[in-house]
Amino acid sequence: MQALLTVLLIVFFSTYAWAAAPYVIVLGVGQDAGVPQMGCDSPFCRRAWADPKLRQWVSSIALVDPDTKSRWIFDATPDLPEQFEFLKAATGDRSNTLTGIFLTHAHIGHYTGLMYLGRESMNAKAVSVFAMPRMRRMLEENAPWSQLVTLKNIELKSLSDREKVNLSNGITVEPFLVPHRDEFSETVGFRISSRSQSLVFIPDIDKWEKWPTGLTDLVHSADHLLIDGTFFADGEINRPMSEVPHPFVIETMRLLSGLPRAERAKIHFIHFNHSNPLVQGSHRALRQVRSAGFGVAKVGQRFTLK
Image (cartoon, rainbow, N blue to C red; front, side, top):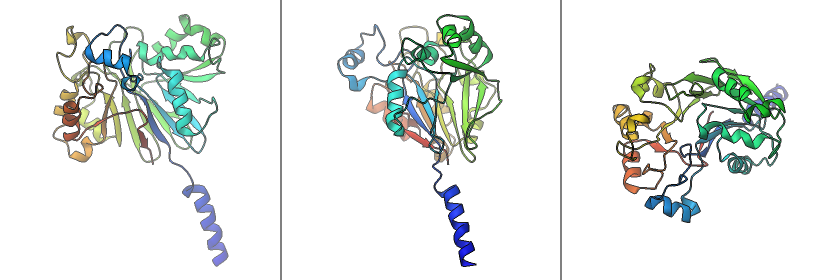
């Protein structure tokens, strides 16, 4: 009996106890054009051009499954080479294995990094690129992206609204449509789920009231949320902000102010324009967000999906 119990315990621990939980790691927090932006001559931009420590990579995250050594990147940004090197160091896996890339939409900060998979650079072999129908057609029908398909640097995989993609070890990725400026493709957010937890990633969305999904319901439905924090407040840039109708950080915080603090703590803002005081390191703005119970995403931050 004792021997049988010992065998059962060995089987249990070898199967479950040593299994490392999948996790999401932040690879970048900036808006499409990066921080600072090309041509920007504001006092902050001048400081950031002079001090590399103030610069920020464009918004992206990675999903890592340590058990299978799988790595998926969400959005291929113009900073992909640096972000992939960071990911290799963070995972302790120096190979060039990239299991797949999921794309949210066709604005410059979210797909143009695919160019580095081509023969002029990494010359990757059939990296799976998951895209919605319009996004897929744009890549198939327009150079230079079509060359990546023709030369089999990438292998396009179709996504559909609310249809889960099964990855490894019970991990799923579910795209869902969100309202945004869809000139060239639809726009989606993603729900990344393990067997018991989930993370929602929405780097770009128009005002929350344009979306049928209730923001409070969204927060209740996930364990972690990385959501659009492009602008902190109205008047932040020298153009009508109705032309770029992202939800202001202060608006999102006001909409969710009635939630328990534990619910608000799930939320981390991401995708900051270079004008946003949060990415500029404003102590006042950071204190305002954190005292309200919310978080500000930073490169290297991990969210474990137990």
